[in-house]
Image (cartoon, rainbow, N blue to C red; front, side, top):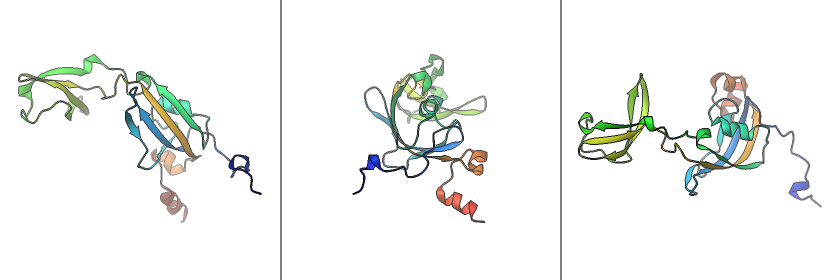
Length: 178
């Protein structure tokens, strides 16, 4: 008779999440109202190099030491996620400074230059004379709830560690098949 799934012997060594390991997760991020902010549903699971800085540091800290098959649910405060809302990033600009005076609408996003960098801003208010733009992330100030399942953990390849980019299985096998 076959043992129930929970009693079967392990299918090999189970890696623990630590720096320089490739971690693959399925996840859902929701705000306080339960509205989905981001999710791996209807797409590929998210793969990243632990310690590589591609995720919020708070998420990397919460999953450190866990392993494949574990499900974690936790919340991130604004300062651990998209940041606190910074009033200094909200500016009121004369409408005449905009090239397209007619096509402007609340919620419109565009890039502005600051110190040579492109910064995304969102129009949050406008009238005939002025446009209010907000350079905060749209989710700044939001508490975020995360539900994730660890799908896979493996050592990163030398190429992944050099580039900081997770390779597909095909890329790994192609590189090893000299």
